[in-house]
Length: 152
Image (cartoon, rainbow, N blue to C red; front, top):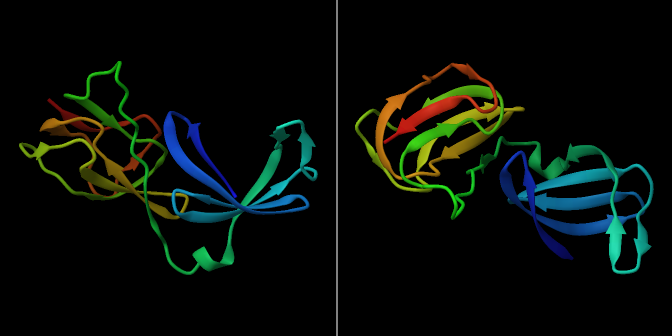
């Protein structure tokens, strides 16, 4: 139906509205299907539709297995994409670290797997360079914004 690019906590997601019935939307976010209940049915106002979401739940088809969702922080032209720290986009537990000190990494390369809200999230590098320091190890709990890997 409608495709959107949305930004939540600095992360960009592809959102596609698949179905609208009264106060329920079926949406796809980065390949994951969700059912969103609205506070009240949608009202059309000229060419803009107001949405006031209150409850988001996963559709039944995606509850059987734990999908891997890649949540890279987008690189912007104003920031340098060479060196710096890669931060956790959300709180969770580190399931695996996929690089080691001394490895050369490229933008978009997988660095770690983070479990958050019972979902596996692939943490990709938003920088290129050499891994200088790894701040976490398997089993560590991290908060949103915590440094995971330092790239120089």
